[in-house]
Image 1: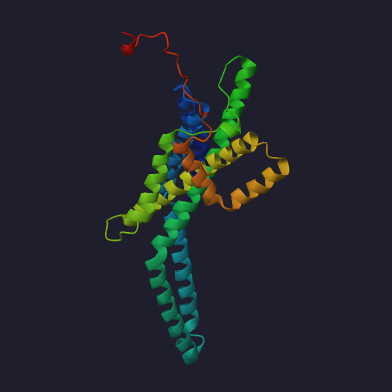
Image 2 (image 1 turned 90 degrees about the horizontal axis):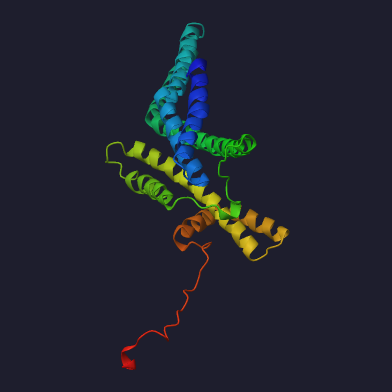
Length: 275
């Protein structure tokens, strides 16, 4: 990827379009968290698509292949200077290089897919997560100064995403662990990569919700600050448990206040046995 294309990618995919998506989400009059979540997912999908179109994987493959070619050329230039001993060494080296090439060509797609499509997508998602959150908070603050009201974020302990987000988790899990393991299916590797991205993104979001639920419990049971810190560290270490806590909250709704239905007094109502 040339410097110009990379700069264009940063400008459009990582800065301009997220602002556009957030503006659209706010115009749809969604709740603050749902608006940011929608902008976050669409921004990540857009930037990931741009990254795939630019095809950064080819750059690394071509660079590595060029290094192999240069090394071979240098060896051939020195071959005539060192006699039979060098030719024997060169033959062994050439055989090693051939094995390396075959191994590289055989495993390249898997390495490139995992690094160039999984890691960058996760990094782009984290960038959008932080930048859109800061952008929305700034919009709330600036809007209040100019008389334009934007609904602020709720307290962190009350954070809840739309329950439909669970489908992203289920879709990612199914594509990565189920469909991706079926090697005979055409495009199984691409499906697995796409599923891995969905799975990681949804895990990060539910990790946030899991911590939000923990902070709700801290306030509910009046946990002291030192114990809160210790429990939060444990929750971070056992992050998968915290993710599952956030997932379970989708159905359990731990923060929903349980109210008992009022029993109406029907003593004055007509009754069959009064007659």
